[in-house]
Image (tube, rainbow, N blue to C red):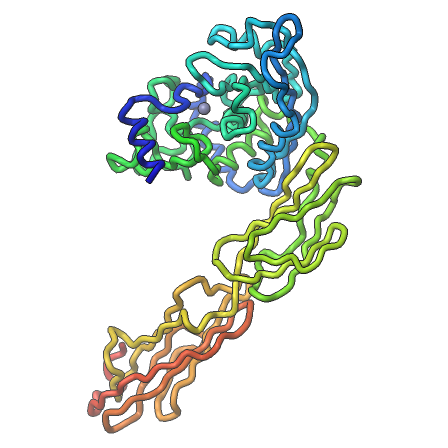
Length: 454
Ligand SMILES: [Zn+2]
């Protein structure tokens, strides 16, 4: 509610928190280039990319500080916290000081002057100033590019994540609509039908006309590449793919991709799924020498034991969501976050099973009636899938493979009665208890060869 109110207020007041922080974008409307993005989906999913960052700090002309010295490791840490899970890693490659009082509080005209100071083509150049023009919080040189300027108050914040996103080829989610972004972009249609060639060129970010949830729009307001709020917290898979494609092959990005992170081959070896109550061993592979390892895990997971690069975890409470287990690795002052996403699972829960007949009607004699088991939750046991077992009284005839979630039953009676049918499910985590139910049986005299098939 608070955020909604904030948004409404901002919309009503006609100003947005960081409106205008966008990068002056070169034209990126070439259909061939844009189309490559969607065609590349998944292509680079197994690569890690390492980016060397050069942090430039502007000081007064006499060499005295214009503001408190930035904590460079914290700048890198803030980026790694967000980007490492997507296989994008940062390290401090070098630092630089620019002694020029005129650039401490940057004007629009001075931006290019600033980023030409000691710009290293082999680095992502990160310029820290006291303020930028028009209360701007950050500015990237272009999309994509190798330089950004940021207000010193934002170097550990989501603004830093946002500006680096521009450097790595991401546009605002509302690209093509803002008055301040009049490049060659076109507006993304509400239904996303032109998502490859308009808007931000990313198809899994919904169309955003900067009007919030009105007029049929359903924008992703907490996306890092939105700018209206402070609680930005994610990139979409499509955005990640777009960045990774730039890291892989864009000529304005690849020069600052190198192997300096020393963890690009480091990964967690572990199962893709954890069953509740079972111990699993996690191994951090290709761990750099001299690194310090700390495991991070959610509260519903227990750390059973830990030794060297190995740890044993157990899922204590099933919550259904994807688990993130992170190996936080400190390597010579830089912290990296190696993440493993794991699906939760558990033995099928009997209480989540509901048995019902077709349209909740009685089961009729002399015909086949469908009885279905519904599972109110995720029952899939991963690669093993799941199967059902049914038990029907011998007085009735059952058809349909017993592993299905439904059966067909023909009660064999000449009077009204009821029968008890039970079922249980097995998935990769094990076999649940039986769930049973009494079904009324209504006698109907012969209706031919099996009657109506429900
Ligand atoms: Zn921006």
